[in-house]
Length: 361
Image 1 (tube, rainbow, N blue to C red):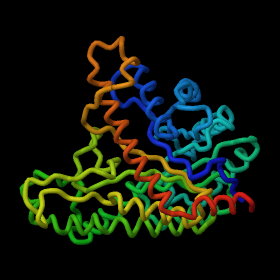
Image 2: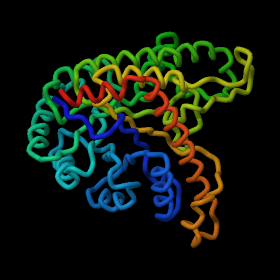
Image 3: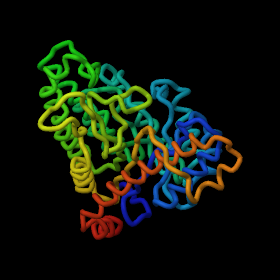
Image 4: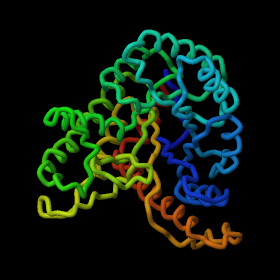
């Protein structure tokens, strides 16, 4: 069976990157804010050398950490598999997870993909202290195919799933909208579009359908008894908030502003919001249990500035501290969302006792 992580509650991590122009003082600032909050880092690295450098900024030695490998990783490719194993060998006992994206080829090469995973499982198990390999829902597969992948590989202990709730929610919302408007990409709509007012009700209906699908997939995969990692972020079909042009990776506290009135207001709730997030966390803790899940807040930078306060000393060598204040603001958003996740976990009052019972098994 899967072995529990040594913690008093499921690990909560967040993106640990610059994503804002500047030198390594930005990473020092991130380390400070993560340490204050109790957040673990999810690093992004293309090579073991890059991760080695980033680990110097780990907030504390004992905090759990993961690494997200680049999008181009293709498990059908021998070089990609070798890179995954390089990370596992170099960072055994130092990180608990390696995250890679799933692949659209799964729909036509399902059995071959299972064979590849079985081979990786054998090699990972030969590495004492190997991190888990988490395969993230990211390529827009039918969710049932993603579920079937882990049902078919339920015996693999070191290979499991990463449920990205934003990616999954957007898939469902687009599916619901396209059923009414075949051939129309709802994500092409923007709040300022002239015709939006005519379809806004159907847009919101599609957005509202996402939560039930995320809960379903969470329940189905959780019931398999495998460790599960979650990427947590909000989304909306109309969002223009991300600086990277995507409709997700949003804070659970955001709103979508409208240039017209709808349902008595000029803003829209996001796909999940704090209440939806709380329901997802509760479902994740229910099965396979709190000792076998972990969470990363995968929220992109948002525009805003926050004075550096006690961290000003990190930037004495900067003449213009604008980007430092932008980084500080983004980190404050991550910390606010961390509190939402932490509160949702605490709301499940039996988490600690459940974890103790699972650790004894």
